[in-house]
Length: 95
Image: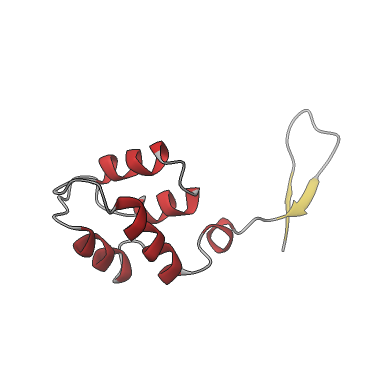
């Protein structure tokens, strides 16, 4: 797919491929869920999305794992890794 845009200051239309980041960031849900289980195994629960994202950043985990967590509610309290994984598997992180 090609995207064309005209912008002031550019010599003319700019054409190029449209990136589909979703496909690049999350190739395999089950593999990502297992990686999240491992990365968050030592994290204390209950916890919230912001704390979970901070753990991934501090551990230098792949950005696709943070992308999975980005679809979670910012205010929900998660009481276990299992609860978090179920939420991701059944909708919240499937976007």
